[in-house]
Length: 398
Image (cartoon, rainbow, N blue to C red):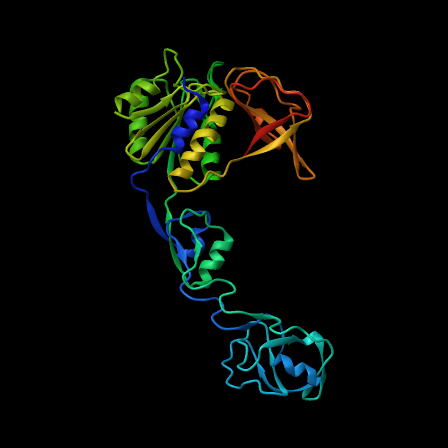
């Protein structure tokens, strides 16, 4: 088995030969990853513009105390008149500044006296004028390729009159749970050895949450021919096939044999990590197979560690999971000389994370209920030892 850090580096180093892209209407691109740089093709604003409602003036004319209102300049109008000495033009937020004016005095700073204004409070020269290119300048890189599109990116692109945008396709992730003992939702139990499958459903939810397109293929029996057929067909219609179960060393663990039979390249099999040491990742061209363990907690954690980053990689994006520092409010017992990922409760107090293990059970890698609540994963390396109250630790936020 390889070191956990080595396995993560191998995922990061994977090269994708050909990324899949498509054009989407701007608002439909929300949540997708941008496949092209967005560069400004004009200055914004293109001309000096008013930032407030007020009066466009010549700054030195404030010394006169009173100015005549020569005209009104609504936003969107093409005003031809200029500001000349002793006069001003009423100007609104977003209006182009009239020629001749170098300052805008807000309406709150003046008193109306018929067709004149009385200046009650002066402002510095250039006040409340948006200069050319204040927002962005022509030729400026505004949004880099590889950025996940959110509302701010949509707003900026709409200001550039971009109606359709090139994005990376969200990878299709086919989900298969192997195990003759598994029952799907609604399926009737006929003997006590049967158990209700949860892996395929939690994986479908995770794929959706972390920006993939889920293809739910349900549960299949522990039969080599069946597994071979299902994985082969799934590989044809998806970018990632993720399986649970069948990757250990038992008599009915066929997934590795099937991957060999499909002429896939095994990137690695077996990692010094708890839970999930029998994790396997393989590829065939730009398609991938991830073999996860069968226990629910184990498959969930390893999906976070390996599937989620791979979904991001196929979109040329960045994995949304991140690590932070936290302090222990109770002791942590290191149980294995492996990289260990332990469900814990987190709280954020005055900007600092704290960790406890209240109601978290110690046992096998099947305890999925440990993932309930406000949780994160406590990360310890294979060289770490047990921790005491107050010790600083690393968390993986979900």
